[in-house]
Amino acid sequence: MKPSAAIEDLIDLERYPLDRIGSPGWQALVDDCKRQYVRQGAANLHGFVRADALPLLAAEAKAMLPNGIKKKRVRTAFFHEDEPQYPEGHPRRRQWPDDLRQLAYDQIAPDAMIRTIYEWGPLTEFIRVVEERPTLYRMADEFQALNLTALADGEMQPWHFDANDFTITLLLQASEEGGAFNYATELREDGKPDYDAIAHIFDGDMSLVRTLERSAGTLTLFRGRNAFHVVTPVKGRAERITAIMTYDEKPDCIASERGNTFIYGPRVAEIYRARREAAAR
Ligand SMILES: O=C(O)CCC(=O)C(=O)O
Ligand SMILES: [Fe+2]
Image (cartoon, rainbow, N blue to C red; front, side, top):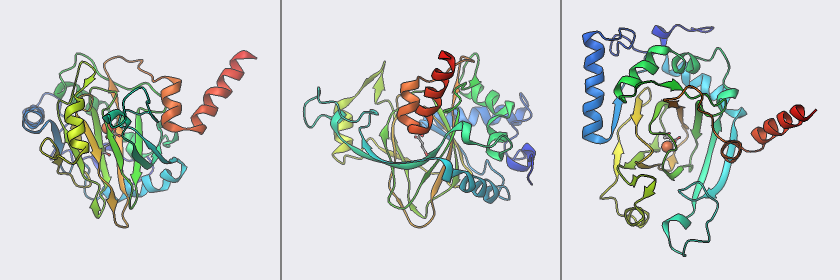
């Protein structure tokens, strides 16, 4: 299939006619996603990736991922190391393992199949309409726009809110056990987290928490800015591999140097440092 796989070899366009923008089949898909959002706060397109392309996409991801950063640290659900200004026992001070491998956009090969999917215009247009935005662009950030993450046995992605209104994820390989995507909708409003509800969740109260059923090849639309979410610890030999696709209403949305350095570590810090040095010469 490589090099330069065609989009119809990757996405099941018979089932999901994203290429026929405005057609009855396309509109039915938009309506279905909106109904799913109302029902469960997320929309799943199961079997989005063609069954014959899935092992190729997973293999491609596995070949690139060793270049990514391997994190092994603890952090809070709010992307901080610790915030001693909050009292002990406050949910902002609870530490979680942040233990995963993450590959940034600039590390994904120009001809990668996952890039072909992400950079395919009709996908952005479909998401724009489901999310009811006047305009939508792939994020302009050279590191964040498209990422791959891999969780191995015992690893998890800790509880958090996303910085973006919504995130699109594509599960490329499922774990044998664990690795569930758990979430609680409407736990943040106007930037204010519902700390009482979060404290209950941290204490093991699952009454607000749902699990989204997904399998390898499922595309998920999810409004993570106000929905609190976690990937539970993975069990077994198979890594859980996800592509994370980021969008913005503005064409020039880039993240801060501080934010990118926190996420991607010394490699990206060095890129910024070298640029500053070159600019000063
Ligand atoms: O891998 C997933 O399913 C979720 C990823 C996620 O929440 C994120 O990267 O912000
Ligand atoms: Fe997230």
